[in-house]
Image 1 (cartoon, rainbow, N blue to C red):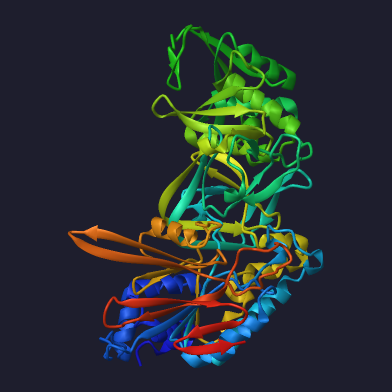
Image 2: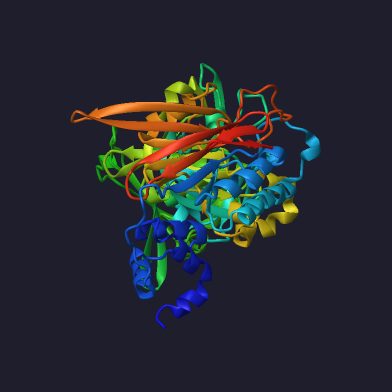
Length: 640
């Protein structure tokens, strides 16, 4: 039978298509499968599978009162979930109402180890217990409602945009170029140095929503509001990691790290050879003459003594010639004073020796990245002497290097690894300029002036590393920043790092594959004209205001969580003299009202019920507020 082998190889995907083809279009199924199973399945193949099996999208035949029933609940925060409330929800409400779809709207777990709130330290290191509790809560729902479809929404996104690059051992790479065992640069906050570590996990997904653009002359970050930043509030305090949206944006100054060091030991090479290699990269030429290699240096007379002194110290033989060539510009830079040009030609033996140290003209040798900080200072000084300049007012702290982009990108990477902050920009048409300073930090004063919120529709990504940090670059500006929160637990438990790469995902940690008919969503989703979401970005302390903020942002009907409050917001717009009505609801919470980390919160318990007419766009949303474990629904009183 056609597709029989596909069914055998991918039984989970087969069942997913069979159970969801009526609710989603083929391209939507393709996107969901890619997110859940990390397999790209062409929508046309999904359509062919449906046709081969007779799974056709027929019109729903039902009477007007045959509504589809959906229940939305969220914010259990296990182990702070209210067991009595959950029993009332499962044992009485679900058994009575028998919903077609059950949606869990995020924050099923509380996560002591990755939470930003101060909590009882006795709960530390119990993250697996919390996942076990959450798994059992879902298991109870599946047992009570085996025929209902279940959907689980993740609460937060902590990612970069698709233009952001990450530093690897092989250089800068985009998210889609990373291998499963890629070695990337990270920052060890305790040792205050760069460390190379294998990524534990990689997250890639499509995202539509708001991104924060954080920028100044030395930083350019395009990140989700929940992305965690490595920063400190002043120059002497310790480094901190917090979500960007949690950092005060008033008239305060914060510092972000833009460079660090690997603290390399001295590399086995003399300073004179380091300097002559730098001069060869900027002012040397390599020629093949028969079977011999010939290296010649070209420099104006006022600076040629710098090269001659190095060669004399090395005791290398060379031939020296002066020529009056009247050169007026170099690398697009107009020369103010035209000088006599000098040539220094090495002997064949010395040319061969130097070519063995630096095989290519515009490529940094690999050992440059392994130099100690002192040795790299020697190398960089010679590079600046050759093709750079020093700022007149700050000659000891502000330098410029000019040349081809490919070479300057390599120099930028080496500078970053040796405590130099850099930024790369175009200079005079096809030429580039690398700005270099020994300052490792950049500061933001009044961050409100350096953040803009941008609408974004594209891929976002993040990786997880044991050090909880990554080194990224965007628009040739480098920053050290935090990564996904779950890695905080790995730092405290390095023994689980080998397993984390395979298992550290929400579906795996909750063991969703062992449960019945649960679809996992990294973000909110639209269903029959209602957008169900966790609602992390929009939050207010007043009931109903968070619902309003979500409606203002998305411009549609909303059912959302995260605020722990009940609330409703209505809005009517007019198009061509016809009213259009919208509604947004906050879905209460399922956790206790007296958790250890907050006193007397303004929270309410409950959930949201939705009736949807499958034959039209009509729906009815009914909030269920539970007070003292009592609520009335459809004329029936429920008591827990």
